[in-house]
Length: 208
Length: 208
DNA sequence: GTCTATATCGTGATAGAC
DNA sequence: GTCTATCACGATATAGAC
Image (cartoon, rainbow over all chains, first blue to last red; front, side, top):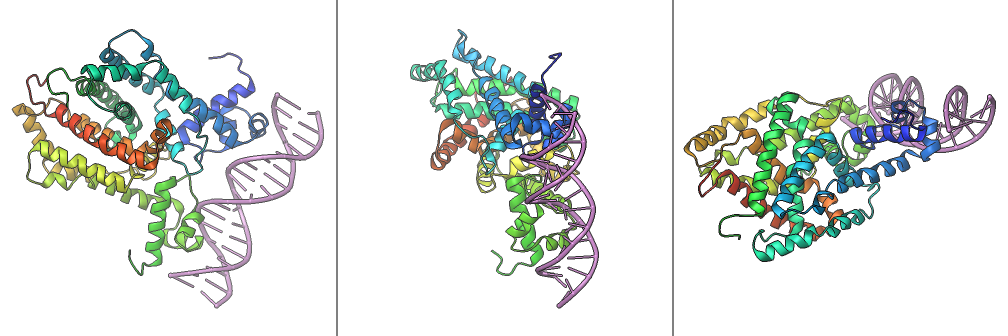
């Protein structure tokens, strides 16, 4: 931890924590100020309004969210291997930031629309890694299933993100403790990996 | 539509709509009253408080959520066929109630805990259909992969629910229109079905 | 930059007339 | 049962002292 964060940084960090946990509507400026060990006036002094502070946090969260994908894709490995590593990284990342997917999805679903904008920019950075071209090439060569890339992304996101998002729901439904769920998540991860790899890179015959 | 709903019913229906769309923290009693064409006093007259009204709605939503699974399981068909039908029904159901999963997951993640309680009751009803025993038997016979049933449920929920939850996110990331996303969802559904069935009921050799 | 005090508004909930 | 009026409170935001 930074031993001497500025007031601005402290508020920003507190805001990130509180917004991610409770969403825009679920918390107040005072709560954020308190979490930062400051008072409300300072929140508005530095960020003008709750809304503007939120926009800032949301954009940075969206960046975390999208950039968490990008690094693996630059490595020099087979597509299947990249996929395995990617899934592993995603689970690891989501264990550290379990609130992130819900936060993004919820705030994107708010009518007011929040800070929706050109997140395409970051997404294009992923395209730049060449991963999409690599997939298309693999599909032409027959090593990868014929499937549009949006579906590929959706399959990965569904299977990696949902389990962390639904933690409390699953714990309640199945009456699990925290430790039991963590274990469950670990074995689930290996199922997800095998299932996705098997489906996307079929080994035997019939690709279609 | 009921041509002559009572005031109580009107408020309940409005509350369901508003709560599902915006969550507990995201709306006010007045907003619900307005949506019902009534005033705030009546909301509290019939339901005493916003919180109690919410509990009511949440429980009924949870019921919808869990019971949406139950019917298929009573039919007389092969396990694989049941799975296919179940996934189809889930997608169908979620198209009609796209806010439901997000709503449940969010409110379960709220610290205050909302109306968390014995949803196990409904879940046990699923167990009563015998589907779990059927799975265990199939696993012993080798027609179904060795996998714990919590993971099976999580795989299904992830792949069916996430795509509708993340609609706005995916639309934004991939710059899709509503119509394009609906199409995408349709082809995605068939991938999900094939992927899950292939994984859970492997046809060839090595189950493990 | 930081704080206290305050203005203004919207909220949940109720009292009381009809 | 239904409405208006109202209360007490907490919210966002700002003004002004230091």
